[in-house]
Image (cartoon, rainbow, N blue to C red; front, side, top):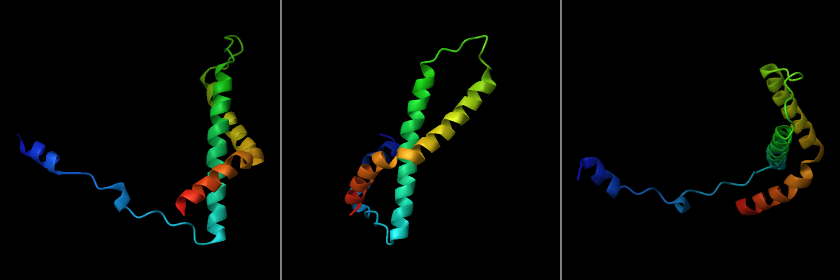
Length: 106
């Protein structure tokens, strides 16, 4: 058995329970900032994926397709649309998830 194998056999990863739990936010301002970040992440992830999958269902017509430039512009447009949709209605999805997240942290 090589020296590397002996070292690997004796080494064990630290337990996750030995790590301290993250502390909850100490002020309402931090809590609100965390809620906003959580809402942005949930909304933009969900709506961004939804828009991407919707675009895949529409075939590209060769005589109307703008090539790689159109693809890049469409990705940027979808990102902007996901942000706008997220700002408008992501709180309905993210608030229950955020409440569960806070319960897990306490």
